[in-house]
Every structure is written in C-alpha cells, then in structure tokens.
Length: 296
Image 1: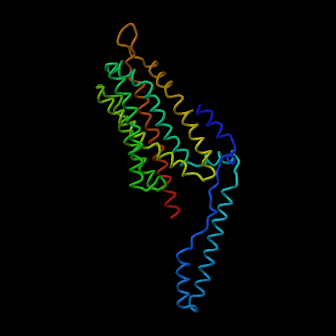
Image 2 (image 1 turned 135 degrees about the vertical axis):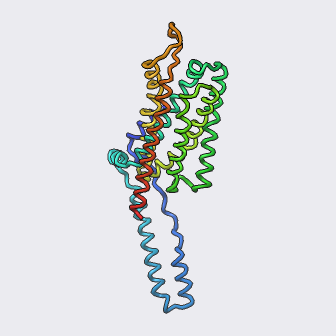
Image 3 (image 1 turned 60 degrees about the vertical axis):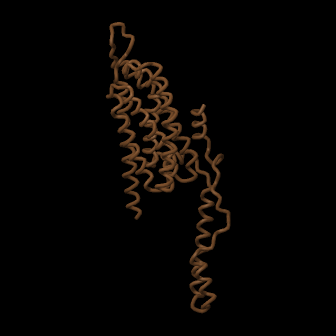
C-alpha cells in the first residue's frame, strides 16, 4: 500500500501538494531600529542619520523576506527536483545509509527465528517470545531515547552536529551487528540484536530530519517520497531474498536428509553489509564539514 503511494508522490507534481511557508505576518521591529528610535528621542540631531539607516535596513530585510516568500511559492517541475536530488551528495548518501539499516532490519525480522532455532539450537517458544519482545521494545525505546538526546544535547536535527551524532550511533549499530553471526549462544545473539534494533530506532527519526534538511523547502515533499521509495525498492524488498539466496548457495546441513540448513552465510552477509551505510555516512559527514569550512 505504501509503495504505490510513494511512487505517486514522486511522480505527482509537487506544486499540487506543497504548502508554501507563510511569511505574511507582521515583521517584528529589529533591535537596532528600537535603539535608534530611543536615541532619536533623547538626541534628535545626532541620531537622525542612524534612524534613517536603521529604517532602510529594516525595509531591505522586509523586501528580502517577501522575495523568499514569492520564491517558495514557485513550483518546480518534478524532473528538475529529481535532478537536484541526484546532484545533492549529502541527500543521496544519507538516504543510502538509512536504506542499509532498513535492509538489515527487514532481513532480521524474517530470518532471526529460523536462525535461532536451526543454527543456535534454542527452544522454539523461547525464540518466538524473546524476538517478539525485542522488536516491540527496542525500536520504541530507541526512538524515545534518540528524541530526548537530540533535543537536550543539540536542540534539534537542524543542528550541524546532528549528522555527527548519527555517525556515532551508526558506528554503535555496526558494533552490535558485527558479532551477531559469530556468537553461538542464543542469549548473547538476541542481546546484540536488541542493541542493533535499538540503534535503528534511535537513528532513523533523526536521519529522516537531516535528509529533509539537506534540500530546499519546495523539494522536500518529493525528497521525502523518493527516499521512502528507495528504502522500499533497495532496502525492504530484496532483503529477505538476498538472505535466502546466500543461505541456499552456501548451505551447510547437519545430516544427510538436508532438512536443516545451519549455514551462517546469510547472517554474515546481512550484518556485515552495515559497513556500506557507515561509509556513506562518513562521506556525507566529511562533505558537510568541508562545505561548512568553505562557507566560513
């Protein structure tokens, strides 16, 4: 259901669902203008020129705000927006990073129970119960924790340091992913999976805010739809099939009947693929730092 809607929003011209920002309210009087008025009351002759300059400066600001308001209402063709998105490396790299996370989490949701029962030899009821508790609690607690940390420490995702926070959290995500296909104890495995899903819940809302903050307001509806489309096509859709294909190709059976495949190849492939998103976020962070230094 969500996939067709995403395709529709990408292809449908943004001017039909873009709500322009409202700058129509009265402008607040600037501090320099207030000070100039007070000074003019006390010393009319010497402060007259300063009052004129402040008034001119305020008028320029008003004209600039009105100009931006008009520009924001101008619709851009979808083709132009898509071209801008593909030429925006910060946007593309951030989308690839979050898509990589969704690829891993989708494969886990489908294959963890089979892996825990067949490979790690855990009790079936225990696997179902613990994994159900994991997928319910970990992303919720992660999202709440991420929101609190981002708000208290950075103010919001618009803070330039937000991408750095996401990179640190993603490194922790990779740290939880790496040992998963290696450990043979089920409790250690499910603990690492809980940590990985927690980090996914922590990072995803912040990353979505950062992704939309890398584009202009008029591009955001299309950018949001396109990022969701990529997550579905590149992340969610192939995850289960890639894992299953690797498992079958490098199958290891514990008996001649070939009933239970105890290969860990699928888990190695899924968890170690987290390095792709880490590299994307690192490059995005370096590009962001370079742009800030260049603009300074």
